[in-house]
Picture 1 (tube, rainbow, N blue to C red):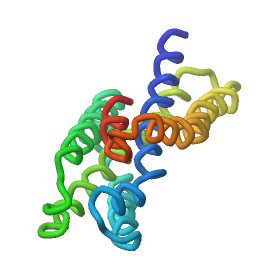
Picture 2: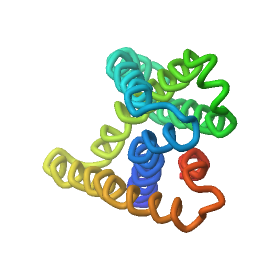
Picture 3: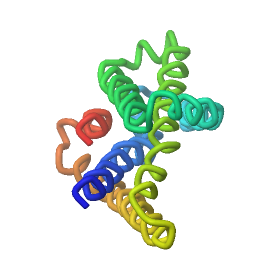
Length: 175
């Protein structure tokens, strides 16, 4: 039971981090980096395409190294990328946007590594007759994060006017 609760809390935290970024990223790009919404959506698209391309290979890798190590690998990738993004200036984005494509490609791979393993980790804790219940637990925590994080991150952005949207990546690193 303790392992189940800890994994479900982890699901809540990493969905809070990832969806906090995806919710406000276009405004972050516009206000902090001065780029248009089309360019910002391309970075998120790269993350999604990288995740899709990585799902199957990461599934095979997970069977070799274990789900826990694969999830930790994804968490480290995403945290390092979010921490790096804190220090990327508008000048860097303007002169070397390819850095952002690489960064968001790595974020997508990290997100895929977490996602391809986290639901099976929860489901592996139950008996065959409880699969639906445990899947429900997983989705309750992931969806709760997706509901709460736009509200929470938006509140934090408004509550800290000196930081404004600059709080977005520290928020993701924290969660």
